[in-house]
Image (tube, rainbow, N blue to C red):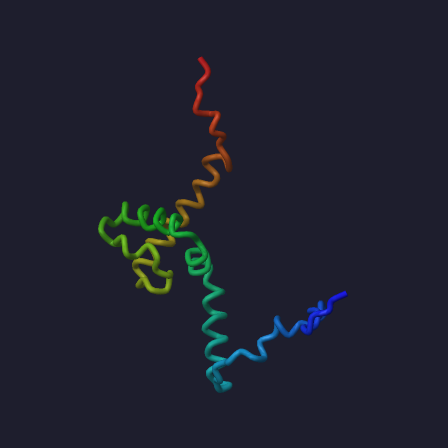
Length: 121
């Protein structure tokens, strides 16, 4: 039995999960619709979605491959940038590089064991 003055936590209390006490930014209906359409159009763009959700390692690989066809186009500082920050000519190079990488998936197996470092004689 709990003799302390604090009540036991209620397991059905969901107030910790609602956002009623959070301060939210008020926006007009027009601002809400504009924000919705901007987010919707961003999710319709497959290249934007794919590039933005990938890690920095993937972006580095894509930009390096794109730089092979047009040297000096991308700089090291561009690695963390989202897809929408590039102009259309750079986006086209990114898309071509991502398409090339996707082709690699059919050339090499999904996984290569580390034990394959040994060659039988």
